[in-house]
Amino acid sequence: MTPDTTPSTYLQSLNRGLHAAMAADEAVHFAGEDVLDPYGGAFKVSAGLSTRFPDRVHTTPISEGAITGLASGMALRGLKPVVEIMFGDFLTLTFDQILNHAVKFGAMYGTEVPVPMVIRTPMGGRRGYGPTHSQSIEKHFCGIPGLKVISPSHVHAAGDLLGAAIASETQPVLFIEYKSLYPLPLFTGSELLNVAPAPTGSYATRIVRNFETGEPDAVLIGYGGVAPLMLEVAERLAEEEINVSVVLPAVISPLDIAPIAQEVACARRALVVEEGVAGFDWGAEVAARLHETLFGKLDRPVRRLASKPQIIPTSKDGEAGTLISADDIEAAVYEELA
Amino acid sequence: MQKALTPRGSLRAMYETMALIRAVETSLLDLFGKGKLRGTVHTGIGQEAIAAGVVAALDLDRDVICSNHRGHGHYLAYCGDAKGLIAEIMGRPDGVCKGVGGSQHLHKKNFYSNGILGGMAPVSVGMAMGEKTKRSGAIVVQFAGDGALAEGAFYEAFNMAALWKLPYMLVVEDNGYAQSTPKALEQSGTLADRAKPFGIRVMEVDGNDAEAVHEAAETLSDHIRSGAGPGVLYCSTYRLAPHSKGDDIRDKTEIADAWTREPIVRARAKLPLEFCDAVDQAVATHVRDIIEALA
Image (cartoon, rainbow over all chains, first blue to last red; front, side, top):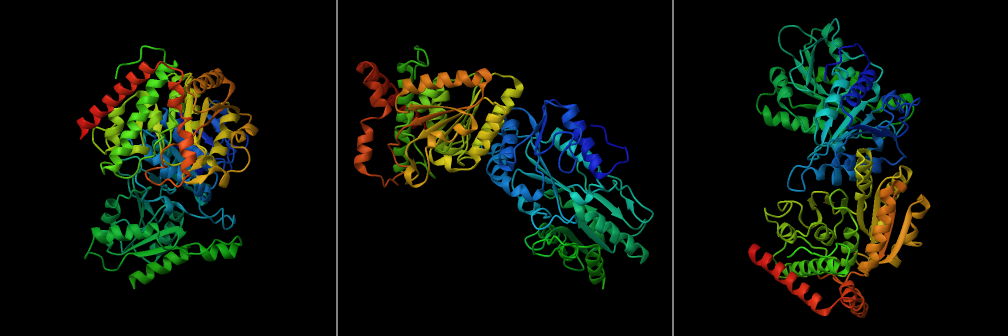
């Protein structure tokens, strides 16, 4: 698949990625709730697909568990299904199908059975949808053997990653899109921030730095919806001449710690940021892996930053007071550098 | 064992299948008792006519089977691979799934099983979607027990299968018990009617009568293969052996009575005695040879 070089928003990139993947391979089918044009999906990520590929786009009943099972069945019989779960919160209903079915077929029969399927879903808050439509629950799906969890930031060419997952993966992928990223242009750098050249690989970890020469004073690690917050903090700190690297893996499980550890080894101070709630979180895995990798080489313990462990209120102030913010991150960086 | 020269749907051929299943599963219980098997085994002793009758009605070159935790009979009816099955349950590398899957997780060609009840319904429907998309002409047949019909996944699957007229057949093996719980304590209404409001064709049959099962399965599979949409074959039967092993709390006279109406007794009444005895002897030798070779 050729890289998408047209300037676009995160959402447009995903939409183009889906169009390209379906155009490239007739085995690709798309299924989900309310995905037909003119509606085109609750967040319009699937816009235009049903018009262009009417036989391969399936609007489904409100049955998240069953459509996930449907995808497994289609994948086992030679198709490459992509399933849209309307809100990430609804992934709870897919858990049995993912854990006890989709990821088992590939390995439990003694020889590898291909199960090429992608479950994609919008995650996260900041849009006032309240306690059951704003969560970031992907941590519950991390650490499942056989499941790849991908959550690109807006620094990644999100649509290319989605296209690569659809075209190349032979086992199930959970693709987490952050709703708060949908309207943002893909980030390629700014006056104060530079994006390091992408290493090879479909889902390469991207690094954004607020300095040209020298070493980072601290490294911020995160994925998905917290990327714009971390970039904002990096811009603020640039003005204070504090060097910060923002490290953005796309594959959050299983985790390749090497590119993260490489940057952290220079700074010796690291903060892990996520929008999900604190406790038994993704940051705990990152911190543990960094401590294993860099034992004795860090100046401070790895600091975890997450949203408060409580429900997400609908009110603007209530939501803002619950979810991790740029101010929280900035304050934490100062504490770590103190 | 010699391949049957008789047509697959004949009572003689189905008797051979049933006898093989019975011999293998009886041996599995024996091996379990001797401590040769780990984990658990769920046998379908008494339910063999359903496996034999349904599978004999399928096109084995293309049709797909999704089985459950009680799937040895389905597997043997599908491919006759007693050695691969026994070795698998013994956890050996020469088992059909190299000892990884064990009793409840079998896969060979178009046969797949999983020990999670209900979850295979949407998967089977997805497979049916795949086959319909490929225009293969195949149908997907899922086996499930009466207890599993309490799982909600079935009703989501029924809805999609009927909505999209998918080539999906659910074979219900109603053996009256969900593990230890009798049907009356866990199912409301008429279980055989559960799929009807979806517009799904339901055929009810005596699941201990191999010929009746076979005839119904042929009728229903033709209907489904014609593109008319999914179907349910509802088979009444009785599980003669415990749910897994040695965990039977059912009434002993009820079990004894069921032994007089079980499918092999029923088939023997219609077949020449010498044929049946010869088959029984052949499968006994076949299974004994396998187990000796694996010991």
